[in-house]
Every structure is written in C-alpha cells, then in structure tokens.
Amino acid sequence: MSQPLSLLSHARATLALGLPLIGSHLAQMALHVADTVMMGWYGVTELAAVVIAASSFFVVFILGSGFAQAVMPMVAAALAEGDEAQVRRDTRMGMWLSLGYGLAVYPLFWWSGSVLLALGQRPEVAALGQDFLRIAGLGMIPALLVMALKSYLAALNRTQVVLWVTIAALGVNIVLNWFLIFGNWGAPELGVQGAAIASLAVQVVTFVTLAVYAGWLPALRRFRLWQRFWRPDWPALRGVFRLGWPIGVTGLAESGLFQATALMMGWIGTVELAAHGIAMEVAALAFMVHLGLANAITVRSAHFAGAGNPRDLRRGARVGIALSFGFGVTMIMLFLTLPGPLVGLFLDEAKPGTAEITAFAITLLALAALFQMADAMQVIALGLLRGIKDTRVPMVIAAISYWLIGIPCSYAMAFPLGLGGVGLWLGLVIGLVCAASLLMLRFWQRAPR
Image 1 (cartoon, helix red, strand yellow):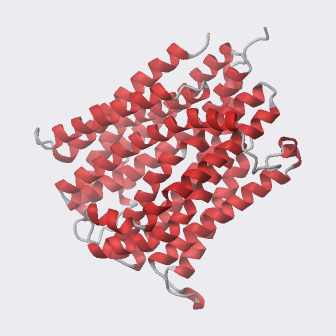
Image 2 (cartoon, helix red, strand yellow):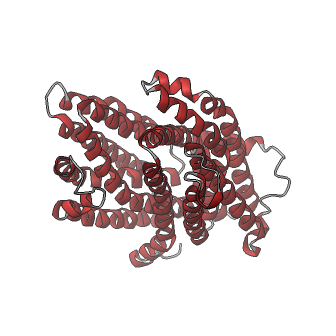
Image 3 (cartoon, rainbow, N blue to C red):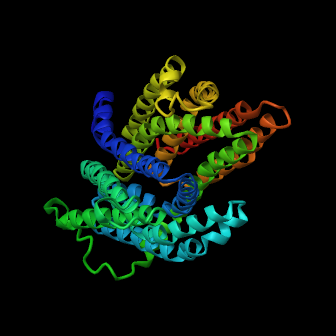
C-alpha cells in the first residue's frame, strides 16, 4: 500500500479545492444582500415582500437541493473508481430529479399569495410577494440545475469556473436590478417584478454558461455529459434519490431552526429583530467559509472512499476539521474584540433607534461566538458523512437536534424563563452543539479503517 499523504499535502489540496468554493458561496450570499439593499432603496413594503418571498423560495430550494448536492460525492467516488460512465449517469439523474422537483413545486409559487396570507402577512405584502414568486419561481429549475452542475464540476476539481461564474452573476444581477426595479435609462419601472425578472435571468444565464462549459471544455468532453441526456437511467436515478432526499431534509431542518428563531424574535420586538438580522448576517458570512471547506472535504473524502484509501480519508478529515477550527477561533476573537465596527457596517448612526439596535446586536455577536465553533463542526461533519454516502442517520440527528432540542430550548429560555432574545440564541447554541457532537461521533464511528 502506498504511503499516506502528508498533513501539509492534505491542507494544500483542501484549500486549493475549497477556496474557490468559499468565494462562490460568498458571492452567492452577496446576490441576496444586493437584492435586499436595492429593494430597500425602492420602498419599505416592497422590501418586506421581497424578503418574505425570497426566504420562502429559499426554504423550498433547500428541500429540493439534496439531489444536486448528492451529485458531488457520487461523482467523486465514481471518478476514484475509474468509472467515467457512472460519473455521467449520476450527474444526469441528479439533474433529472432537480428538474422534476422544480416542476412539482411551481404551483406553490403561483398561489403563494394565499399561503403568505395564511402565515399572517399583510394583504399588500402577500400580493407583492406573489407577484415576485410567480416570476422568480420559474427560476427554481435553472437554480437547481446550476447546483447540480456546480457539484459535478467541484467533484472534478473545476472549482475556479464556479467562482468566476458566480461573481459574474452577481454583476449581472446588480445591473438588471438597476434597470428593471427603478426603470433607469428608459427601462420599464417594474419594482418587485423587476427584481424577480433579474433573478430569473441570472439563473438562466448561469445555467447556460455552466452547461456550455461542461460540454465544451476538452478535458471534460470524455464524460459526454449531454449525449442522449433525455434517456432515463433508473438505477442511477434511484441511487441519487436515496442519497439526495435526506440531504434536502437535513438542510430544511437547519434552515427551519434559524427561521423559527427569527419568527420568535419578531414576537419580542422590532429592535430585537433588527439586531438579530444584523448579527445573523455577520455569522452567515463566517459560515460561508466553513461551508466551502465542507464541500471540499466531501469531494476528498468521497474520492478516498471510492479509491479504498481509509488512511488518507481519516487523515484528510482531521486536516479539514483543523482548518475549519482555526478559522472558527479567528472569528470568535473578531466577534468578541470588534463587535461595534462589525455591526456599524449595517447601520446609519443618524437614524433613530440605532443605538438600541447596536447594543443588542453586540450582545448577540458574543453569543454568535459561542455557536460559531458548533456551527462549523456540524457542517464539516455533514460534509464528511456525505463523502462516505451516509445521509439518513445524519438527517435524523439534525431533525432531533434542531427541532426537538434547539427550538424548544430557544422558546423555553426566551419566554417562560424570561431571557428574551438572549434566550433564543442560547437555544441555537444548544441545538448546534448537540448536532455537532452527534454528527462528529457518527463520522468517526462510520469512517472506514
């Protein structure tokens, strides 16, 4: 048996794969920030409608993204086994399932006004939200297909193109928003519908760009990804479905924890909700680094598992955990030493209420320092487990940790125990610590020796 790779080699390979993915995730998040900022310039009611509509789109997207995410470890493992036909089969069926899911959920977007009203939104917000989702909902299919292609390219170590395409999409989105939301330079002023058209256009252009790249690049032509794409492959489809649906449910469980916390923070007060949003944005930016590393670790662990190399799989896992841990420590120090400047980036000091929002957001950033490490370790553990194709038990662990432990603890400490918003975030910490501990234990028990 060959000598295992050195720790430095593992670190270099993980960063070479992960850094472009980190940049891609940050650029993707910037798309959301750009939409929020530009709609805020347009109008308060329109901003509220787009925020609630975009978060609803995201929840539906997360549930369906499991099939696209399953492509990453499956392609990496097939490549390590030398089975190029399986690379093509798994990617195609991941795209088939994504396409089917996108078609199935579109009626939710068409009649989303009634759903938003049932969730307690004001009629004018619900109506504008429906206007947005009827157009943006058409982008569910290209958005999921884009994720499948990104997973395919990442598994083939083609992460640079993922980064540059995402950055280009951010620029296109800002320009289209400028024209279509506000009606600048003779374009029609479409407001909320303009933002939706911009989002849809960006998803379509991104898909076409990645599809052309995946089919045109000489180094990838041997996989013949688009050859007879319409032909079903039922064994591969079943394989992607079995691995993918628990990934989607796991993502839904985690996003549900944070959505529920935001909802309960709104019960406490407007200042607290504003501070919560700012602190969560800062924490989410840090999380993108851990998520990119987790994606890279998924590819590498799947590769070593497919190649039958348990020594490098475990050694690479330790290196990935150490990299994420080191960044987490850095962010904890930043949250604790410079909370004021971080919060100040999101607020105008001249506006009323800024001092109260700033004070509470600084308190929440101290709590974010508590869950920063747990959040990092749970996503790294999920990445490792997906690399060895273990997704069902992690789904159960996530559901229990977030829904049966995290949310009840948040509610109990916020309201019956009277800790308010601080109690809500302490519940987040408890849920994430439970998930991180159990998922890490699961990986080290299941990882091949």
